Image: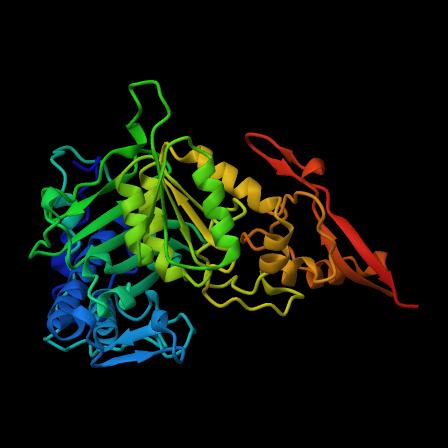
Length: 464
C-alpha cells in the first residue's frame, strides 16, 4: 500500500467538466497533477497495445529511423499517436500554460510549440482523472495539501520508451513515461505506464496495463505504488529491505548491449564491488530503472544517449524508494529545460547538449550504494573517461593525470564548469591570456555531510 496521499481539492476535477478555457487550473496540488499523469500514461499504453499485433514480433511496418541504419533510433506510428493522445489530454485538462516537452516533438522549444495541439471543445478528448492517488490509499483523515502554480512544473513525455524492443517483440520492456520536474531541475514525481506487464511469477503478460507512480515530499514520506493494484507488479519497499543473514547480498548489475569501452569499464567496476554478482542485459531505459526500483541490491548503467524524458519519471520512482540516480561521476541529474547549454547555464560557453544526459546515468536501489560509490569514484579516476565525456567543458588541452573531483566543480544547474565560462569571468585577472583548460584534483577536494569544496587549477597560455 502506498504511503499517505492527501485527498484535497479533488472537487477541482468536477469543476473542470466545462470545456471553457477559464476553467483550467492555474494552481494545483502535485498529487492531482500526478494522478492526471497516471491516467494519461495508461491512455498511452492503450495506444501501444493497439499496435502490438502489427509491430511486435519483428515487424517494421510504419517504423522509421531517426538515424539511418541505427536500429536503436527506430520510431513508429505508435510513438507518434501515443504522444498525441497524451498531450491532447493534458492540454484539454490543464490548458496551454502547462509546459510539456515530448520526445516526438518536431522541435525542442519545450513550450508546447512542438507538441500536439487540441481543440478545447473537442468532445472526443476526455478530461484526465485527478483522484487516482486518493483512490490508492485507505487513509480517511487528510491534511490540506499545498497547491503550486502549474508554471512551476515542466512535464517530460516519452510516449514509447523501448521502441526498438517493441518492434523486435520484447514488449515486456516497453513503457510510457510522464515525468514531472520542478523549475529548479528536480524530478519530483512521475508515472511509468507499462502496457505489457508480467502477470505474477509465471512471467506471462497481463492483459491490463498498469502504471507505477511516485511523488517526493520535502516534509513527509514519499509516495509510490502501482495503479491499478495488480498481483505480481507491486513495488517492494526496497528502502527498508535488508539482509538478515549478515552476509553480503548478491548484487544485480543491469546494462544494455553497448560495446562502449567506458561503459564496459564501469560495468566491470560494479561487478567487482561485490563478491557475488549477477550481470543481466535488458533493453529499454525504463525497463532497467523500473527493475532497479522494484528490488534491492540492484544497479543500472545506461548509455550516453538517454534524454530527460527517459529519466525524469524513473528518477522520481527510484528516489521515492530511497535509491539514487546520478551521472557516471556521481553528480545528481538535473531536469531543468532552461539550462541545457552546459557550463555556467550557457553563459560564455557554446556547448549545447539539448535534452540528453550527456554525462551518463547510473541508478541504484538501497543495498547497492557501495557499488554506486565505487563506480563513480573509478570514473573520476579514469583519464580516458574524463577526457572523452568532459573534455569539451574542461578543455581539450587539459592534462588529466590524477583523480578529479568533477562531480563538485559544477554550476548551480548541475553542469560541469566550462573552460569558456571561466575564461570570460576571470578575464580581468588574466588579460591577454587564453585559458587552455582546468583540472580539479581529488586530493584538493573536501567532502563533508552538508557541503563540498574543491580547488580549480587553471592552465593559462600567454598569447603575447
